[in-house]
Structure formats: structure tokens, C-alpha cells
Length: 262
Image (cartoon, rainbow, N blue to C red; front, side, top):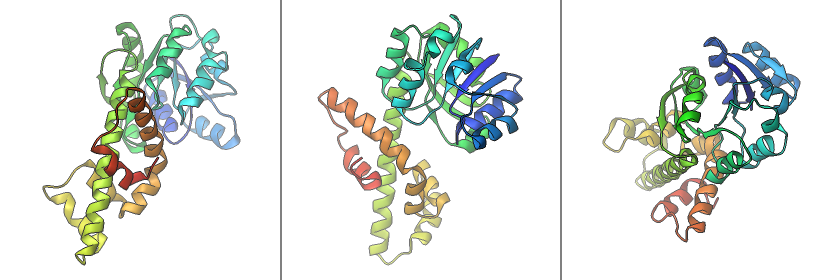
């Protein structure tokens, strides 16, 4: 397939590598020398704008950091006017479900496809994707996603990918908060954090959160590596809950222990 790519960063570059290795032709936006070098090394062609990436593309992948950036790229750059009518936009950025529906209302065929995992999962072709969208758009996106994602989990209508991802990240942040509190309690008992983190992955309390923190060696090191991502996503989750007249319930104090007030 002919694929445009916007967001050749920490997550995007390994996606591009996998797409090229799968035989796809990729045109990726690179606005600085370092990014252009990484795109070229991955086997893709560098272009200067989202509009250029969308020209003649059968799919365009958006993998930027914030929801505002997604809106700027998809609604403020002329990208939708450039993309062929039957092409599909694949939104990997975690954000508001309203963004995907706004892009669809503006005339884009779009799926929201937030991911769970990191660059190493992409490199292994094993990152998880929560995929929302109508059946036709989902099927058009599958050949792209199958290059680097497994499992790809259809979760219903457009916007549901984001809803599932926000629930996932709220729960994960809460679990990190519980690990943070467990380490604090261990310190009160006279235990070193390293001792606790070496033991817990082998015990009944083990979880993805425990394993992730243990792999980094400390709660502080793990929070440093993912804190910005979790704070961004938790803020979106809280905003959606507020708009529904609800809240995050018992998740909230644990989240605050992990990432602060966000």
C-alpha cells in the first residue's frame, strides 16, 4: 500500500520500519535533519508536510503526541482535501473520542486506533491496538496495522478505540499508584525499594504495572519515563468523566499517587 505517515518519533519510527519491511511504500513527514535521517534509515521517503504525505496515499497514519496536534494535522492543514476519496486515516494518538468524530464529520474516512505498549512492542510486531470505526474503514486499515500490531482489537464504533484506551490508561495509572504506595509502605517496614521490586514480580501481587516498575528499577525512574504520557491521558479521561457528570471513583486517589493532580 501507499502510506503517508505523520509523527516519525519514538513510536512512529519503528512503525515505519515495520511498514517498509512488510513491503509498503511510506512517505513520512520530516521537518528537521535528525528526523529526516531516521526516516531515510528506515527505508521511507521524506516529505515536508502532511499534505504531501497524503497525496495519492491509500492510508495516512497519524502518530503525534497530543489531541490538539491531531486536529491541527487533520483539520487545519488541508490533508483531508489532498487524500484520495477512498483512503483511510489511522489515528494512533490517544485523545478525545470527539476528535475522531470531528474528522469524520469533515469528510475523512477514519479509524481511531490508540496503542498500548512501547517502541519495543512495535519492533516485535506485537503492540496492541484498540480499533474503532465502521466496518469498511476498519478493513481498509487492517493491512497497515498488521505490519506492526498484534493483537488488533475491534471495539465497535468510531471513538470507542479512544474510550477503551482511556479506561486502560486510567486503570494502569491507578495500578502504578498502588505500586508507589506499596513501595512507600515497604520503606516504613525497613525494606529497600530494590529488594521489594526484585521480589514482587514473582508473587501473587505481580501485574503489568509491577513488572514495568521493576524493569526500570524504581518508581521514580518509571514515572520519569511515562509520566507525561499518563498525565496527558488521565487529564482527557477526567475531562470526559466531568462532562458526563461523573468521576473516576476509587481510581482517582491511586492515580494521584502515581502522577499527581494531572
